[in-house]
Image (cartoon, rainbow, N blue to C red; front, top):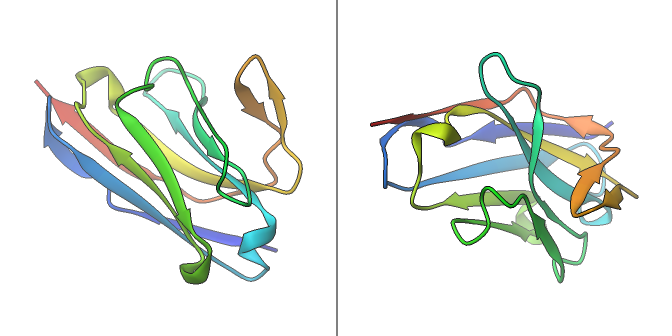
Length: 125
């Protein structure tokens, strides 16, 4: 089992920034591709960003390209999501996820094996 714990969520004004962190434990973190997903009230969970286990390739949802940046530090067993120029529509619970071999279809990443419990991001106008 791989345990994932998100942190860094909170309330921010539109145009502001937040940095989410996800700490992993229990298995070899560096073996896993990592992703961030989010779920807004009344909506289904959606893909946000993905980074390969080596950290040399990333994918982003169109809605966050140019504003969000995913990164990882395998020495610290952590993955991060830097969120800039936040919009009210970014309000959601953000989840960290991990997979050994996720599927990437049309730039969307599927098939994550492990999930955190989420951290709430609220963007006010």
